[in-house]
Amino acid sequence: MMFLTEVKLVDIVKKQFMYKIKAYLSVFSSLLTIQIIGILLSTTGSRSMGTSSNGFSLNVSYYTGDIIIIFTMIWALISAIIITTKAYRNDDFVFVSNRLSSNLSNIVFLLFASIVGGITTMLSGILFKVIMYFILDDGNVATTFISIQELIVGIIASILYVFLLASLGYFVGMLVQLSKWFTIILPAVFLGYLFLGGNRNGEPTFLLEIGKFFIDEASLLVFFLKVIAAGSFLFYVSIILSNKIEVRQ
Image 1: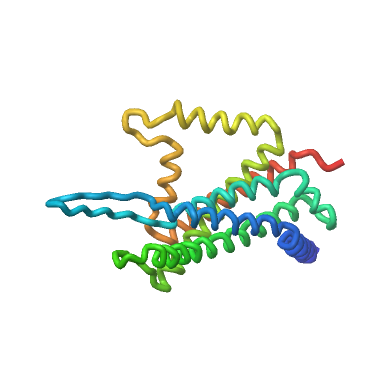
Image 2: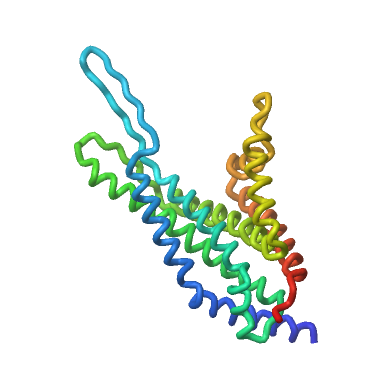
């Protein structure tokens, strides 16, 4: 009996996931838009340096696609928050479902969106390098192209970063749906900690320590385990919070 119940849950989650891929196409169109904006902003250069001597001057400008992954991570955070809203939750009622299947289908959808976001981020970075190669065609352009192995590692890392932000966004969205007060409390706490918590006596802040915990990890396997552990915890708490949200009338 338990086996039959689990199969039924899997079938429901699969149907909801397939439905959401078609219904939430705007999520992916916004991803395309945000990455195009990221590419355009990246063309201005991330930093530059110059020197001069004996009548000669040298100016070096650095162009990176870092802003593309940053924009994609913000997109994942906002998209995850949006799908927790009542309008999106009500879409699940076209199926015979419960809170668990709804949450699981959302998690699978966010994982799928993270994979798409991670892959397109790396491809956008390559496209950006190609564009800059032809724009800066003065013969003094140094380009760095990555190997297949580096590309695969970059894609995996990008997917994990995007998925981590998606899990955080889903958790924040559930808090907001639980109580609208969190729309005021969360920004106030974040900004208050950012400006008042500060970097006291040269010591890194708590938020900075959390960021370094993930960013400074050199091992891809360990980073993968960190993201999976953090994401699983955030989604688990989100599912618990969703059970406290009043049932649709």
